Length: 130
Image 1 (cartoon, rainbow, N blue to C red):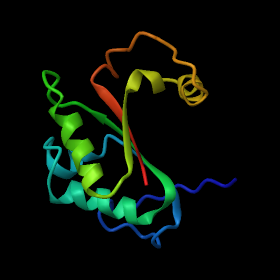
Image 2 (cartoon, rainbow, N blue to C red):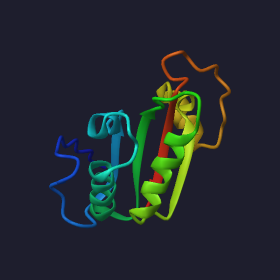
Image 3 (cartoon, helix red, strand yellow):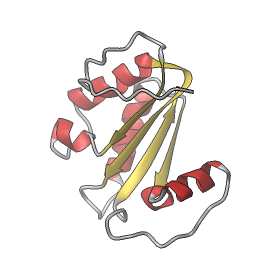
């Protein structure tokens, strides 16, 4: 199938409701709320994404943890996604997706225990399904 990449305002997305299969972002949330993983802009982005997605569609977020000492950011993001209406939210370490091969293996059910690089040690992948 065709893939279309769209650069748009995260909180005011230009899509018709239920018209998008997947929304993917890479380290977006820190730019919306200055490392506070909650707030009006982030929640607006989650709600807009939920509205834009088709049933069964996915919002995939790759985010880095600003505070490596706690799991607060993981809990805050997950709670925001659930509040926006997402049915399921999976959180995975980003090292599983550090190479295209890892992503293909992951979705095929193969767990490659590759050692995480310093760059991705503090990162998580959130997969939220409508």
